[in-house]
Amino acid sequence: MPLNDVNVLVIDGRHYLRHPDTGARWTEEVAAAYEAEFRTTYAPPPVVEPTVSPEPEVAYRSLDRLEFVTLIQTVAGIDDVTLMECRNDAALAPLWFKLTQLVSSVRRDHPLVSEGLKALKTSGYLDKAAVDAIMKKWPVV
Image 1 (cartoon, rainbow, N blue to C red):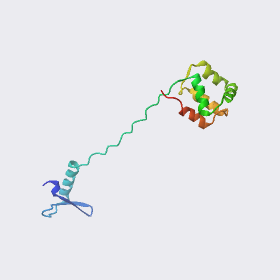
Image 2 (cartoon, rainbow, N blue to C red):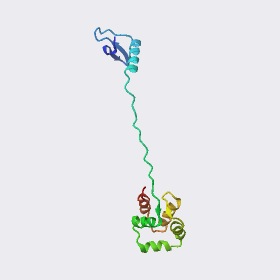
Image 3 (tube, rainbow, N blue to C red):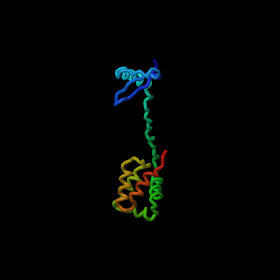
Image 4 (cartoon, rainbow, N blue to C red):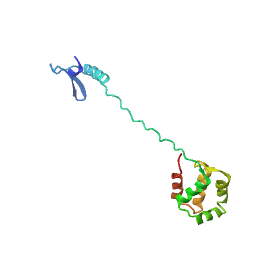
């Protein structure tokens, strides 16, 4: 007899099978056997969890010295007078020398960039929002 022709009866947590035509009850063991067959034969498809693909890695462009200084001025709203004050600040002189004289390009991931922006923030030329905006607005490839 196919399973479609069988009714499962649950009485006080016990499973019984009943044939719809005869109404005859079967034992719990027979019910368990049919239930097990039903679960293995007619099991629902497995739930497939959606895969989340990782965010693509962003490739940031290296900036030449003028682009780097322009990025800082544009994003942070620093005018030329403030820029010159910044360049003449004794505490920042080594930073400016390294970033604008020793290198031909500035990479976003270089430690000197984050250290330099932190120094500009500590010296009061930038605030945290400006530092975050500069890093966020860094051009991509």
